[in-house]
Length: 218
Image 1 (tube, rainbow, N blue to C red):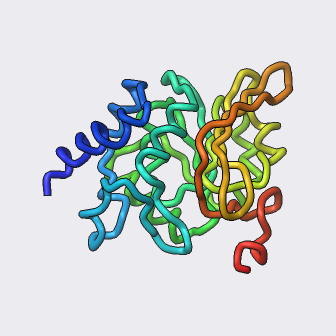
Image 2: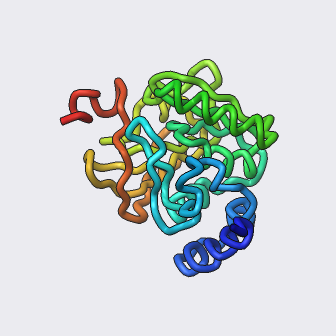
């Protein structure tokens, strides 16, 4: 299969018609080999307009959702970014193309190990991956210019707000366990102001400041 051609088709048919305009974001989506972030048997669907299971009850998000979340972060190239929920590592790689440094937190060590192998094989040197409760953030590396939450949360976790730089942006799917709305939150004078964007559905954010594991398995 011509994966480069499929990436270009993805950009032209799924992203641009839905309003993704940032050339840096579009170029990153054209460049990062999404098919290498899913299992071999499903690589032929890697560029389809859909989320794909990656194990441990997690998914690699629909390309459009990756693009819009990235665009809302307004990355210029010199930011330190915290990503909550590494998953396959695809979104992480997109961020690494656009930011100076990316810290990414994953609660499943199996997913983190596979993602790390992909980052190494693709030559990314500006990604630092950690395993733990993503709702706690990463205080030892704070503050962060941008924070991206890639799981549905009842509200933006307080530690994330604390660890965000003044003028920084958090993008997160906020709502209940089954449906959310994408929120862009900016920190100004220590206060958070929120913009509401597209409806979405993400797997639940599990942790101290998210959903409990028991709630997730009901």
